[in-house]
Length: 175
Image (cartoon, rainbow, N blue to C red; front, side, top):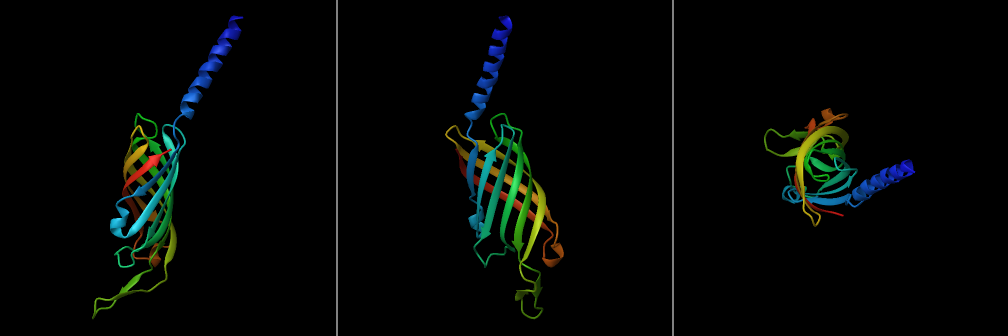
């Protein structure tokens, strides 16, 4: 009889712990509020796997052709590991991949300072790492800063760049 009570108590404690974890909101949508200043738009979806890790994907589109930006668009899946005390927030480290379209090599005329693209747009994949911090209010609003650096893997000789960077100040909502 004592064994049955012990088993019931152990099972109920396991189910109560699982029920507490299921109450956490796991989905997030965010926008980068700095990117419009550079002539682009970036939106992110993130899914919290547990209190210390998450998976996400970020999409960036450059809409200003006059900007001094060589990137046209990118899609960046990432994995984050959180080190804060609250659920999926605080300081984090991330690993990311980036599929991007970048302008080809540019050729500059010596006499007049005009430039033109020698090669067509180059699609390449990058791997990189990043750091940042996320703050989440009780009502679910998100404030996040991040920065990351990555290296082009397949076609760096066809562009003027061999690396990519990610940075931003994101505002969003957890639901």
